[in-house]
Length: 331
Ligand SMILES: O=P(O)(O)OC[C@@H](O)[C@@H](O)c1c[nH]c2ccccc12
Image (cartoon, rainbow, N blue to C red):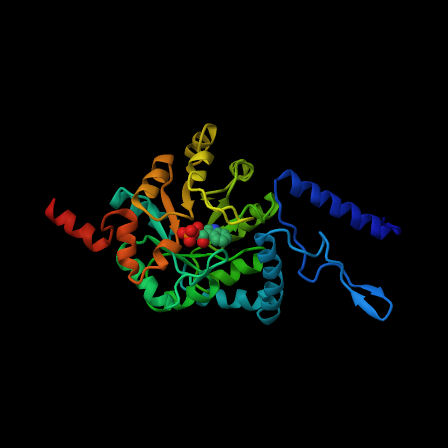
């Protein structure tokens, strides 16, 4: 128990914070991977392996590692340096506009195609990984937008790819939003399972100030209802993958769009994106009928050697811009 007034104050603040987090259904604790201090015990120091310093699930482990990485990155490139670099970066592209435009052209959900070599659940998916080759293939195949990590975004943009880019990193600190923009991001992913309402609000504001779009990701009803209550949300991603155990259920999209929620979404003109586990035209039809305007697809595309052909088999038809042009000529 706390003893001094300062300890009491810290204890009280932590308790309030924990209460907010549990009310919002957030199961991720923000604690550095070093855990609690070591205990002095005779000639040895030891760390207790307990609830406090052992991550309880995969997402928590990722977030703890991210905290450490971000601390290091911030030391190397402080916020002031990012601010200075901002004016030299190409202005952001219209991420939401590109998704809507592709949907209007093809009659199918706009595609955000993910450039990734590996996933936390499956390990390496594409051993012959060349982010620029894959990004060019996606663009040729008809993707509206692309998604990738900090490392890949810059290379993709510098190679002349035109599609708007989503930064798909675990964002836990506003510093990462500036860094994403410097790397050429036009949109960022904000995960409701990691960020309490206050952080979501603050980060969506900064994202807007940087003229980027925010894809706010939810994976259960509690998170969906939290996000629907927040002002200023333009795009929601429904993840079919449970980030605590990585199980995929593509009917999650449909379940979370039932009842009053679809009315609120329509009223607020929120664009909904179905994420994860999609690989066939039937999967696409399922989420489209549930009401989504866009899909975020990684693994099923990236594991194929020809990414453009992968997109055609995902949708069951050629959705490339070239095919679209031909159709208009022949109509
Ligand atoms: O590779 P898939 O099953 O098509 O999924 C893509 C994307 O939805 C997934 O990578 C993703 C979306 N949000 C996340 C958060 C953490 C880890 C992974 C994700």
